[in-house]
Image (cartoon, rainbow, N blue to C red; front, side, top):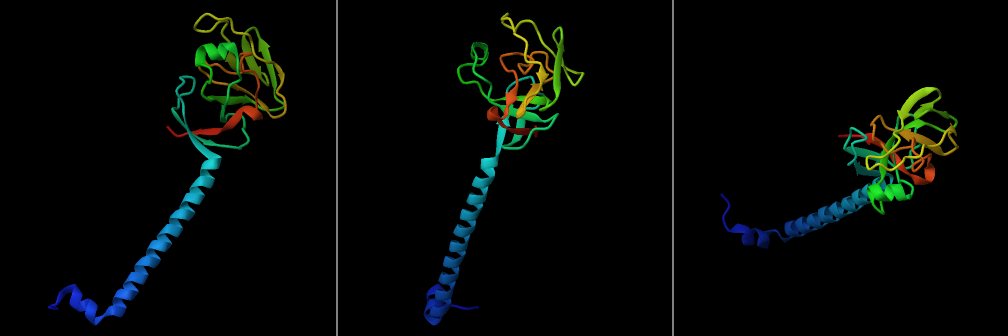
Length: 184
């Protein structure tokens, strides 16, 4: 068994200590470089993605992975900033959180209405209520051809506040935050 401890070893082999210290410095520098690259990649990824939490019962999911800038397709869930209106402010406050709804109509689709039932390309997508849960009258949403860069959004929930009501109407690209994919 070798005796004399660390100091005896250091006195006999100073070049080993120097190599060891240099190796440690290189490992630390490589680790810092790798960490900086990882943070840069994570930052770039975060610019195009977000985790959104759904607090509304209108969708059966409570967490959505959102891809910013994705082009919505029929059936996708989009997250968007609702337009300002007294009705929205009364129900959701001065700065409502983003809404998540299902794309029922895409640009070029035809939205029609019979009584309070809304159809996209002759397929029933939603029925509008006459009044909110608080009793406010609910004006009906738009009909006609869905404009370029806009969408008609709904959910199956009876109390969903979506395109079937004028306070939401068409949801256009300028208000869309991204396309959501349910994860929980």
